Length: 460
Ligand SMILES: [Zn+2]
Image 1 (cartoon, rainbow, N blue to C red):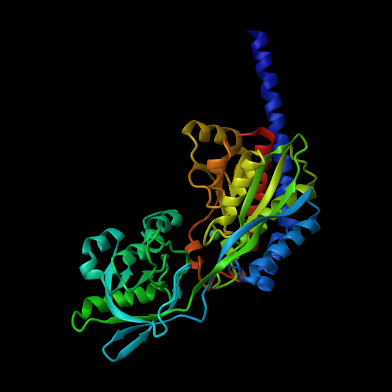
Image 2: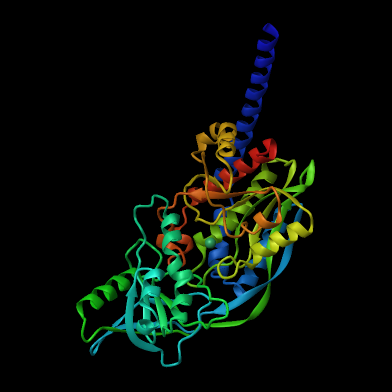
């Protein structure tokens, strides 16, 4: 009996010592991020000296060259490019749109959806069919839809606490809506911007073509314009208000581009990896600050923190700056392909692509309740002092998703910052550096460094 008690107390003592060591190291990492942090300054450069960086653009190439140089300068063990072909979609001259009410034309803020086609030179003018869902549109059938502009107007559901859930459930209108409308013979599609905020900023984002069927011009209008158009359609039954829009976008041939990768090689297991990443490309309306400049600069910062505090990970830790998340996912797909080809073992992959807001925690994709309980038992109390201890089952990220298929055993993790303001800015002209808070950004980088440290030391 006594022997058991003694063994138990030795184990408890060891465990306390390990926790104390972990706490000290993590404190050091936070201090480095908050006192000498460089991700805010780096983000400033990316946003102001390079700016928007849609896949295939000259700016995307500039971002590749600069971020490689940045990581070379930090002296990481390996810094290299991973070649990948990406789509090259261009917006062309600024779009125009108006609600036509008899002789009155009311201008409407509009942006073409990524990967959409242009309108004819004169634009499209047509009657409008408003629907709330794809199902409702399909119910109307070809005879009603043919030749019309389909207007998807289902708002964000404000009851979700996580705004990403509202985005997820309203998003099918933008992703799939235009392809369904095209099949039914519509002339064009306009979509209510995917946001809860009511303002005059339209939100772009990719739309998908249905395999084998033709595309029609598709665009997003601001939420204020969507409310106005909907009200007018209800008021003016005859003669009904019409809609006009003109856009000039084009899909050019694919372009050679790159994922940018920095690595600190593991001291014990060089061929086992923990990756942290975001996407380097951005939409073309602003600077891609929160989406996803913050994510890529935080990822680089994690490695910089490790190196600066002198932490030598047992496993290799990589910062991966994925290319082409927004309109093709080619970078993420290529990374997963090569990881399998090179027989790399991946312990975990973390993605930060939900904005650089106040960190709350992490979500673990496709894990069991027992698994998440163990993660909480092991890590929660250490992360608690930093308010980054919400460890849940949930989504991870688009760029790392393909690894699920190619790299057996990898745990995919999403960094979860506060979500309340993200969709005010997401894919709009407002996604600029000025809307990023320095401390929130740094706390996120430190939180990821802490989690990666814990995984590196104790596994999952
Ligand atoms: Zn993003």
